[in-house]
Length: 230
Ligand code: DC
Image 1 (cartoon, rainbow, N blue to C red):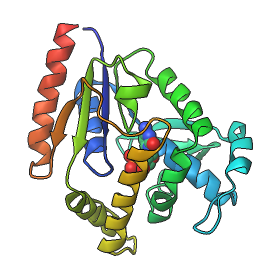
Image 2 (image 1 turned 90 degrees about the vertical axis):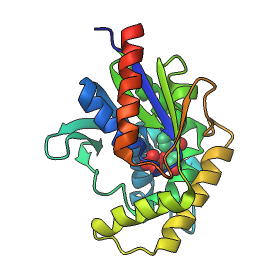
Image 3 (image 1 turned 135 degrees about the vertical axis):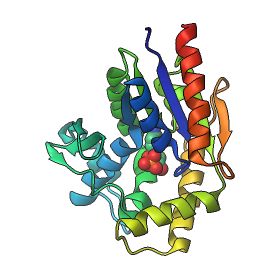
Image 4 (image 1 turned 135 degrees about the horizontal axis):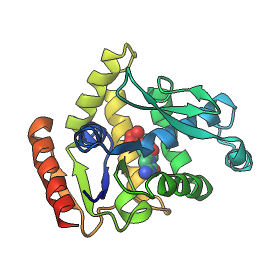
C-alpha cells in the first residue's frame, strides 16, 4: 500500500492534534506535532533569558539557533512522541500558559521558521506522516495528498483549552485562555512569514458544533480514499 502525506492546519485548540494522533495510529503513520517544536524553542528562549513578558532579545536568540537541538522520541505511556530539547524531555514544560503567551512572537521569526521547516521536511520525506500546524499544507508539504483545515469558534476552543489546563492542575482563568486564543489567532494569521491561511486544496472543517469522534470517522474515510487513489 502506498503511503501519503497528511497535512492538518488550523487555529489553536481546534482538535487538530487529537485527530492527527488518532489518524496516525489508525494508519500506522508517524505523527508530528509542529506546534511542539515552536513551543520548545520558546521554552529554550524563556529558560535562557531571551524572552519574558517584559523583554525580547530576538537577535540574541537567533545567534543561538545552532545550540537548539530538537528531537522527538516515542513515549509508550503518552502513545505519541515526546519532544526533547538538547537531550531533555520537555513535554510537560511546553503546554503551559507561560509558553502559550510567548510562542507567537517566536514563531514570527523567519530564521526560526526555516530551521524548523527544514526539520519537518526531513521527518516527512518518506511520506506516511500526519503533521499538524499552521503552514503544513501551504509551506512544508504543498504537495500533500490530503490537506485539512480545521477551525471552531474562539469560545469553543478556549473552553476546550481551559478544561485541559484545569485537568492538568494549572491555575488559569477562562478569560485569560480566551484572550490568548484570540491573540494567537491574530498573530498567527497576520505574520509576514508563512501566515496561517487555508491552502486552496484543503478540506475545511468547522467543528464548533460537531463531536470530535464524528469528525474523525469522516477524516479517516477521506484518508483511506486518498490512499487508495495514489
Ligand atoms: O499548535 P500549537 O497551539 O501548539 O502551536 C503553538 C504556536 O506555534 C502557534 O500559536 C503558532 C506556532 N506554530 C506555527 O507558527 N507554525 C506551525 N507549523 C505550528 C505552530
